[in-house]
Length: 491
View 1 (cartoon, rainbow, N blue to C red):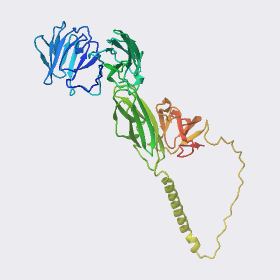
View 2: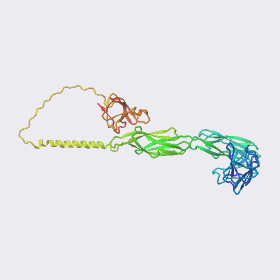
View 3: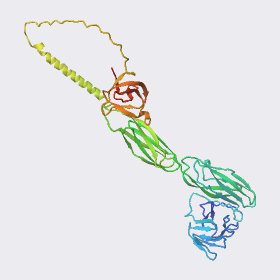
View 4: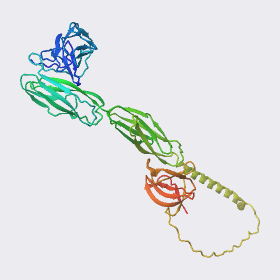
């Protein structure tokens, strides 16, 4: 009667795992405490390989220990490096390597066999296999996204025509294709079927060695499985982004490993003029395949002038794979708002009012003698004033009002130590060669306007030139009219 015996129902005698020279792995439940192994079907364990004799070795289990004896094989039986004779049994430790011809074998019990797999054997009325399955695993490692093949050979050892269905239960369906999933085999017939393996180029196609089973099921529902393996090659890819600000100075850096192997990344932040301080908790990040992590970044200017003007900065964060792959960059703007910038106007107004009040008091004090002193009876003499008429002079034609090409401008709100930057082009964009700083101009300097205006990055730009040869683009102020102006018309 046909029986299907799944592992881990090891019975009481364990299993024998046999590996043939081509890498095929099969597992045989040991159903009796004494049996023979060989290529012939009348053995308790049939190993169908040319290097195995028809009757090769005798196996027996006593007191929970396996012993083996050669029974006249042509290619020999070995335990470790010791050749086994035909006159006595040699003890075999659990998981110790045995060799029958060119085939290696290990005895596994429930305590030593790996978990998570199963073995099925199809037997006939006399307990012999009716379906034999062999598998030639891929000979080369697989690159995710590429295809490779394995070959399954099915042999009908029964006495009737059998319909055999093939499946790959251990791999995702999207990874594998069985070219002919159903076979019709006459008694004694063999057939080969190609299996196409094509894991997608995604993080779930993890790098390393993968085991899989090919299941062959007969028309009567009997199943036999054979084990195969392949090696997945690693690939690197990652995603990097920066969002913010959240609040005034906090940003979120997002890093995700899109590769199929663990990877290390180094994260850094910088600005062209080194004017900002950065607080980043994790500068070195290790991510597993598909793993994503968010990093909190805090930004602040190195020099803070609470009474100064608002300023905008451009900075860039960079993620570099530790393996030396191509880095990724993400840029953002940081705006510093001076908390006491408006107090300078109130302070100036207060000082102005104070000066005017003091002047009025002094003027009043100076007039007191005229109001209360003197007392003479003689009238104050009247002084005659001669009036002359000035000749009429023609007025010159007025020049255009405001900033214009050909005109002049005076730099304001740009004190020494915080002078206005002159750039190669009208932009603040980090990484753009046009944003390179070519010089600085400070309060009181007069420049000639040679081109403009241009609106870019929220500012209005003019091309200017100084008498000492400095030339480039400088910002007049923000286009929406907020914030300080950095130039005024020079008449």
